[in-house]
Length: 129
Image 1 (cartoon, one colour):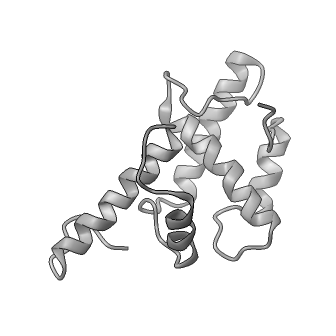
Image 2 (cartoon, one colour):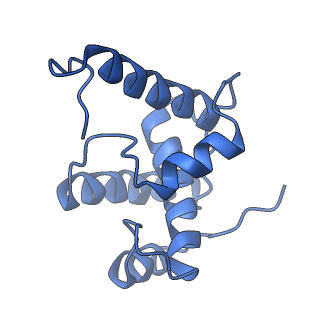
């Protein structure tokens, strides 16, 4: 975990923060200098896209998804959901992490319990375009 204000190497901290901002732009469908090749290389070295907040944060977003389903009747949160952009990104992340989990990748935040919980509320792992 390299913080933005990394005193040992300030330029590294700035660069790492830039990668995180470029990934955020990619997720939001905005222009980004982080192409597929760069993204793949960063993911292969275990690059952390955000500070890990643990299970409590996951549970909070899961509960927001349950509330979304209660309101709209499904779990199809748009990635750019204006009422809750963080929930839209979280849903997108769950799908990406599920793919890694299915492929047996070691570096994924997804696990069998999260899969079970998401499926129990009708979460769709793949969305038709």
